[in-house]
Amino acid sequence: MTEAVATSAATRDELVGLVPELRAFALSLSRNPSVADDLVQETVLKAWAKLDSFEPGTNMRAWLFTILRNTFYSDARKGKREVADVDGAYAARLSQKPDHDGRLALRDFAVAFATLPDDQREVLILVGASGLSYEEAARTCGCAVGTIKSRLNRGRARLAELLDRAEDGAAPQTEATPQLAGPTDPKRGR
Amino acid sequence: MAGRLFPDRDEKFWTAESRQMPEEDPKNTDGTGDDANRSSDIDQQITDNLRKLYQSTVDEELPPALQDLLDRLKAQDQGND
Image (cartoon, rainbow over the protein chains, first blue to last red):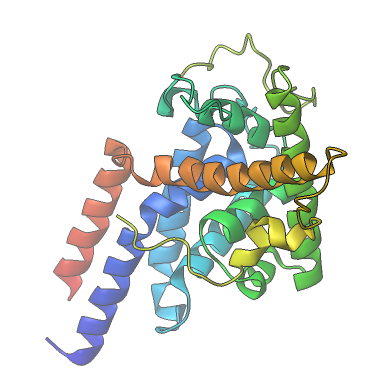
């Protein structure tokens, strides 16, 4: 096997290994499991086709997230974006058991998280969960580092507000916006 | 399965430190110390839950359609190599 072929195989393996993280990012963006899986498939096909343009040694996670994000917003502009399923996005994935220490259950957190605006959800996931640096997140989102920090601050503040309210005994409120599915959405519970 | 997801960098952004919460004063009896503790606890909950939420999806098995796609792509490239 030549060095070039070995490098190419290693790059492909790295891509395959990152697919689970692509799904997690896609779900946080779309808030709809079926849309998320479609997004991941489209992203994988695009990435595989232009793998030669990926520079080995750079951050493939950031590269893949950028492709997925661009695909998501491109689809949204074309009106291809399906309705989000805020309650159902994580419902089937998470335990419904309350935390024994009285902390907010993860499921409730997921509902609160899903109510945040797109730009706040994506930076919370990119920096807070996937581990991208501010600079990598800024390149992925096509904005300044300061914008990333600002979105993070606003997202965290909003989550803290929702969680604080939940700890006081009220359930996290889902703000009604046109693209959010209501509690009677037939996809709920998937 | 992904490797380590949460490098040390930027860690302080996810802690109470970054929010410049007032330090707890043990002599404080007006309740602000409790407020700071509660806020700090919520900060930590946000950090923990965000990571759990992400990891819960990362840990899932890939859906068959996606796994099939990856298998096809890999087989196609092995044929070309």
